[in-house]
Length: 441
Ligand SMILES: C[S@@+](CC[C@H](N)C(=O)[O-])C[C@H]1O[C@@H](n2cnc3c(N)ncnc32)[C@H](O)[C@@H]1O
Image 1 (cartoon, rainbow, N blue to C red):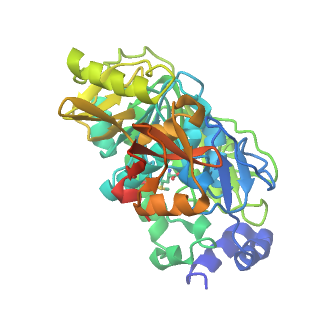
Image 2 (cartoon, rainbow, N blue to C red):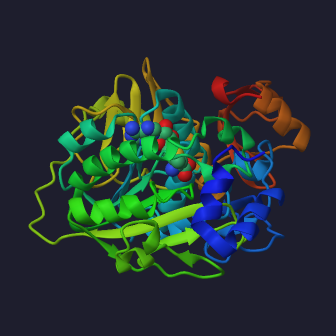
Image 3 (cartoon, rainbow, N blue to C red):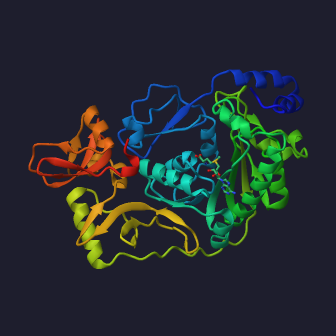
């Protein structure tokens, strides 16, 4: 049942449209997924496309299925996919996804960037930041830096640094009531105003990090005018931002100027109403920051790996993969080796969870490649690919070893249906399990 006060509020706001809006809560929620355009092979999809999302489809993905585990798909509610479509980074840009966990929009923004530029995906909550990093790894992303800091700390370090910023704000979540009824328990008539206070704080910091002329996309999954048009009106009045038009398709409605002070430009924002689109509730606004002189960006300078360490990495790589080591600075954090995405800004005061592609771990006189490589590179990039059966796939993900009667002694990629999902070390006919403990099921 909808919370007390909610139906009255929207009956008042929506007038003749209110019955259709309220009736939509009795219909089932939509689910969707996106395929990963950066990975091969593309999964076989037998589903209707989401009209506003280039890689999006209606339907569910199985969490333990190979397409999900191998990072070929990401489950994401269809309306949420519109946010990435509006943000659509251009190749080579430096992009910030400020409120990023669990990573739906991050993985979508990365699909636009391809393997170019740098995407900083930040999440304030430490537990959620780990989930974000895990999804970035599963999706095989190489040019993503995952951070776990608050917006003010980031803004102090990164003034004017980003070409494009997404603020997918924490909100009252009214648009998800149908998908996740538990979200209703937090709702009170005063909750949207509380959320709006936090959204203004986040946007105040976000805009400091945007370069002059840069693009900021703000989104919520709520219907509340306090968090939608009223925030957009406040941002244009106070943050030097100008609203930009959004291409609306398939029932996506314009924002409602009358829900705020009435400024006509609020109609440039977009609303996804569940009685008008095949999806849940969402709001999106796209802004441009006033032009000006771009500040000089100080780039990250982590500890570059020494010659002897680099030789260990290169030897392991050449034994295991038949594509070149990725371009970019190879650096180490203690014994962990990463490749820094080109253009990564200096991160001295920021908590970095994953700074680009994780190559692996330096051990005594040897190197061991990271699980990340299993999804960052297609099967054809590996020298040794071991095809597994569905039963072996399940047992390996459980932590078991596998047997193969060959004399091969090498790191191998394990693949189900040619979809790589894990590395393993084959010695004396046994493939030792290298599946990360945190991912075992
Ligand atoms: C709507 S969710 C983000 C969903 C994500 N963009 C996605 O597509 O998977 C909002 C996120 O903002 C985070 N958050 C909460 N308070 C915040 C704050 N004060 N500053 C920045 N982020 C915050 C929450 O932890 C949550 O992960």
